[in-house]
Amino acid sequence: MERLDKILAATGRWSRKEVKELVRQGRVTACGRAVLRPEEKYEPTDDILVDGKNVRCERFTYIMLHKPGGLLSATEDKHQRTVLDLLPEHYRKQGLFPVGRLDKDTEGLLLLTNDGELAHRLLAPKSHVDKVYFARIEGRVDGQDVQAFRQGITLGDGLECLPAQLRPLEDGSACLVTLQEGKFHQVKRMLAHCGKPVVYLKRLSMGSLKLDHSLPEGGWRELTQAELTGLRKDVGEG
Ligand code: URA
Image (cartoon, rainbow, N blue to C red; front, side):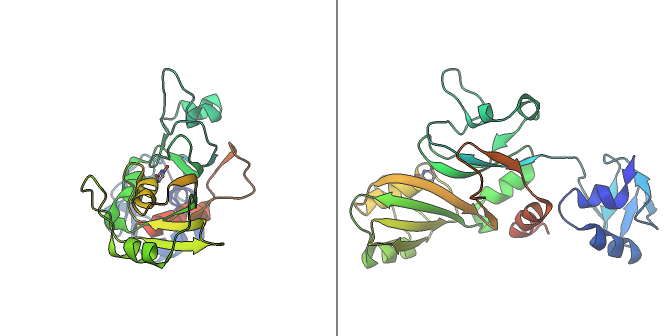
């Protein structure tokens, strides 16, 4: 058994202080009864409702990984190393999976979790969660490319991309690309469509979650409570 404020705060949706306030306002019930004090103890698997809605209090794991090039964004592969191989054994037993795939040669921010619902929401275009990539290209992006991204590119195979943001950097041989969807090889295909093939690609952020630059390539850590709360807010769960 654990304190209710601890159980609810562990979901990342409220701080302990906010839970205290919810309880004071009479908005929390557990096992069919109103909760009167945040110190009351329950099992995380008990039915706990906030404003009449059942809150999933299972413990999920959320890991930020600085993906290096050369690894597959998959949970397992017969022949090649995957991002899961970077984690210690006990994490690998938790059913973690990457939230959206980065290509084998793409580096940068990769979120690993076993929270399927949050993952689904982060990836759904209707959630409008920005994914920001840094790209180095052959040639230079220009105003025409910026305009094409803004309007929404239709790729050679007829695939229609949502409007996206392209920001040239330096002399145009590098850029930032912001997408709200994640189709296969999307950044590379959009830039190739403009005649500017990608030579290097790194994801910098997903919604409010920014790659922690103190993590070396291949380094990882669990998300902080604030980062998790931020992601939940990004998808309207906050
Ligand atoms: N777009 C790509 O082309 N590759 C990635 O890995 C991610 C986005």
